[in-house]
Every structure is written in C-alpha cells, then in structure tokens.
Length: 368
View (cartoon, rainbow, N blue to C red):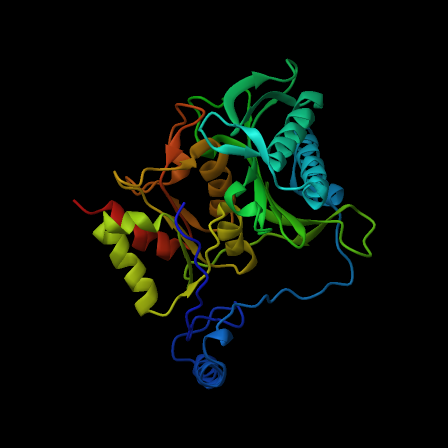
C-alpha cells in the first residue's frame, strides 16, 4: 500500500464551503473567491477544508420506515436489516477489541488481525442464521459457501477493509454486495447486484445502502433517537465536477506517465487532497461531500489489489446510483460491467464525479 498522505491544497471557486453549484463568473462565485483568498492569506493551508452542509433535523426516520417505502422486495429488506445488525455488532467489537495479530493469514497472504477474525465471524454468523441468504463469500476466505438452501441471495463481503490502518485507530469499514441466486456470483457483474452496503466505522458508525430510489445513509446509535438506525441522509447525489481527490497506488505513477500527469493536473489546479489509505473512508467521503474522485490505476510493477466482487462492485453500485461514474481502469468502461470470473478477481478502479472519471479515462485508459 502506498504511503498515507495528509496534505491539504487550496481550493478556489470549487464550492469549498458549500456544495450548491456556482455559475462561473457569477457574483456569488466572485464573492466566494475573494473571501477564500482573504481567508487563505490569513490562515494558510489550514483554511482549505470542505465542511458539511448537512443541517440538523427536528426528527429522523428510522431504518424500518425507510425500507418499507424505498425497498419493494420484502426478502431484500430482511437481508439489508440483517447486514446492518451485523455492522452494529462489528461496531461494538471494534470499541472493545484490541488490535493484535491473530497468528494466521488469509488466502491472499495478508496477516490477519483479531478484529479481522471477529468481524468476519460476525458476518458468517449472520449469513448462516439468515433465512434469506443462500450463499456467502468472504474476502478473508474467497470461496462460495452454502448458508441456507432455501435462501434467495448470494452475499459477498469484506468484513474489515483497512486492516493496515486500523492499528492507528483510523476509520475502517465493511463492504457488502448482494446478488440474487438466479445470477449467482460467478458469471454475473456488479450491475446484477440487488443492493450493496458500505459501513464506515469512525467516531460514528454510518452505513450507505443502495435502495430502489437512490442511496441512503443510516447512522447507528444516535443520541436521543429511539431507533437503533436512523436515516441521516437520503437520495444522496454526487456532483459531476469536483475539487477533491484521493490518489491510490501512487507507485504506479512511476510506470504510467498518464497517472503522473493526472496527479500534476490535480496539484496544478489546486484540488484538495484527502487520502487515508483506506478504501472505505477514501470513497465514502464522496457521499458526505457530494463530490470527489478516487483513482487506483495499475501497472506491471504495481498490480491490482482491489477485489472486484468484495470492494469495487459494491462501491461502484452506490456511486453510479448516486450519479457518479466508474472506470475499470483498463478499457474505460464501467466497473459494473466487468464479468466476475473468479471470487478473488482483482481490478483497477477509478470512481467518483463523472467529469473526473472521464479525465482519468482520457489520460490513462485511452492512451495507445
């Protein structure tokens, strides 16, 4: 994994302090540019953050109510509820378990931590006990296993993405993709998913869920709320333009001139860098900031690490459902259209605001 970077670059005219689109040259944008320039002169690089525009509500809808309205399939509602219950249990485990080496490694050769094993076992327990889960597969042991012969869905998960940064107490997450047993996993694509779920464990636990009418965020255990899970954001959209970037696998820039040029474009045009080295927080921010791009190209010396079924497909469904775009990093096509031919299949990835994914494709994928 490439080195973790924490650098903030100045953003001018990109909606740094709000996310409503500004017309180029409008009085509002001119005022923003002037105010931003003045603030930057006073505070330097510390005054370049993107702050939330989310306002507090008098009341919040619970998970059950949202699912009844926005998820027509009753079995899928059950599956989503069970997956979020598992995420709640993982939250509790992360609050109490020490991050220590388990003394084993997964099939990819990655050292397993105690929290990896706990999270994975909680997911397996949920799927085995479920009446709607037909088969399951974990990134920790990438093979499809039977759960309930009368179940409806094939569920694939990465139980705890970000093992290399969890010992720092940084944000990590769980990714879940759900396919119908009529397509199964092998031979299907990410576009065949019935839903996908991504949980982010930070100071709060929040979960993104793809529903019939868009992407929703649910927050666990919010103070003063009766429901365990409340809807904190609904029908989230990702803007076509952005000024926030997360460049993964930067070693590939040594082999791919196009990637080096792309990073130079971000720097020269004063984008804001937000990259932790964890896939979940680095892509999840696109839903809270409503903009952003995550780029992870590959090269012969820096091969693909992201798993198609466990990571790229679940996030891809969420991002495209929110209005963003994805790229497989090779043909420039959507990662959701890549056929899954193996449980542990790897892929390059670019994901986020559509204009930036187009830029990635033109600078990296479309080069002869």
